[in-house]
Length: 178
Image (tube, rainbow, N blue to C red; front, side, top):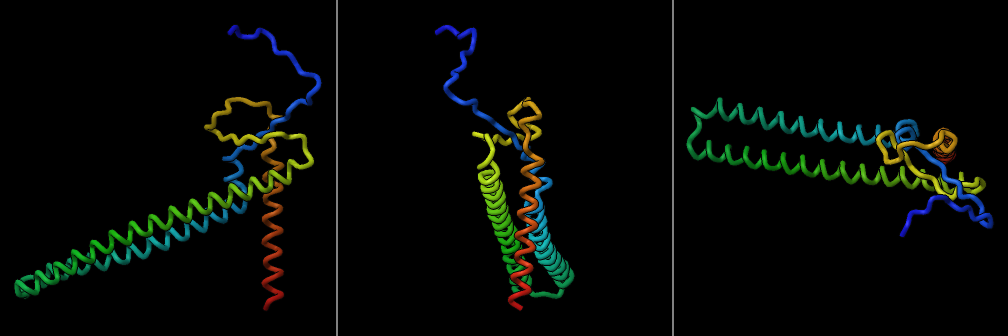
């Protein structure tokens, strides 16, 4: 089929309005996203601390075995070596477990952020003419859009205001229950 050379406007329909939010900006300035990122970092550091402690203990046990080796019987040496191998395997399993836990936590946090943004956009757009809100990022697929379509700052302000209010409400509830 031939490509049309002009676009005909249907005057019986209203013009559809699209808006944009920059997801990179939202994720870097939305207080709830920052809180969850800090919480994930804290959990990661806690896990790393536990692993470092276990690794340090394993290293110390290995050094002790090397120092004690000349005075141990063959049976004692093999027995301690087997315990160290088992401890090393357990450490590796613990690393894998923590890695899986962090991945699940991060997925849950990302889902929470995604839901919070979408729920807010639903309320935000209720009294606006927007038919669709696209998410853009600095390296996203939207190469250019008129700046007037960008509602990122409005959305960010609203998201942060709602988050602050939720935090205040939780403080009030906590103080009333004490």
